[in-house]
Image 1: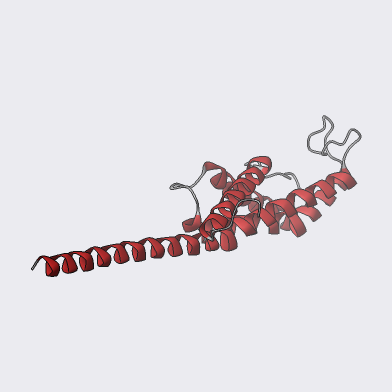
Image 2: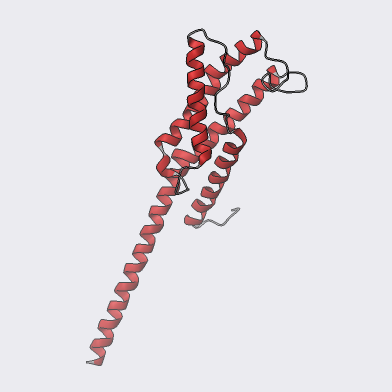
Length: 183
């Protein structure tokens, strides 16, 4: 009788251990799949777009900066008609499509955010894009009295956020895959 009880007890313990291990492995696989989606569908593209936008803006400034390396909009004297025309060209062909893509990522993939709530930084990005869309619509109508969005672009904060979250998720991915850091 004792042998039967021990056998049944060991079988039960074995079943529980197997079940708990299966649950743990399943949760790990689900976490890994989410991290892959976060990297591939949100933070990776966001990082690429912020870096590309930053480098393109740097190229714009290298070509069109005022003496001292300042933007035509950061200088004490107002931008010239030529500077404004060049700015409109760069905004409509490069910057606005880039920031729209960033906004679209935020809207389409908000479920992949690392945070439990939408970061104000990303809301500022969305508002900035909307502000530029109305400005660009006015340009299309021939109104050139406005040249900036009503909400400033959170350039440095957005780049730091995308880089920080991407890096943290890559570390989490490596941990879930069983890779050592730096290997």
